Image (cartoon, rainbow, N blue to C red; front, side, top):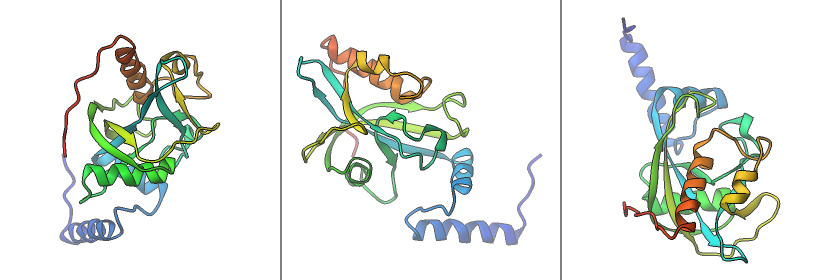
Length: 192
C-alpha cells in the first residue's frame, strides 16, 4: 500500500522541485542525485562523434569519465554525454555537454539510437534513457590519454580497467562501428 503524503510534505516536495528548477536542475549532493535517478526516469544525450583513422577505419570519440554521478566508473572510457536541461533544445544541450565534457563545440545531426538501461547496467539502479546522437565537431579535436578515437577492435580490446564491460556505451559503439564497417549506415532520426 502506498504511503500518503501529508499536505505539508506535498508542499515541501513542490518547493524543492521548484528550487531545483531555478538552480538549473542542480541537485545538492551525490546521494540526492542518485535518489533522483532511482526515482525518476531521465534521459541523457550521448554524443557520438565519429571519424576515420589513418587506415580509413571508422572510429568513435571516447573520453575518460570524471565520475560525477557514478564514482565507480571514474577514469573509464565512455561516450561523452550528459543530461538534457529543460528548456534547452537538443542542439543547445549537445553544445553545452560537448563544451563541458570535451572542451569543443558540436553540431547536432540526428538521433542514432535510444537505449533504456536495465537494472544490471546501472550501478546505482537508475531509470536512465540514453539517446545516442550523431554530432559533427565545430572545432578541432585534440586527442590525448583522456580523449581518443577508437575503432571497434580497439574498443573490444579495452579491459575492465579501461571501459565498463556491461555498459550501454560499449554495446552501442561496437554495434555502430560494425554497421559502419559493413557499409550499412544506420538510419538516423531527426528530432529537434
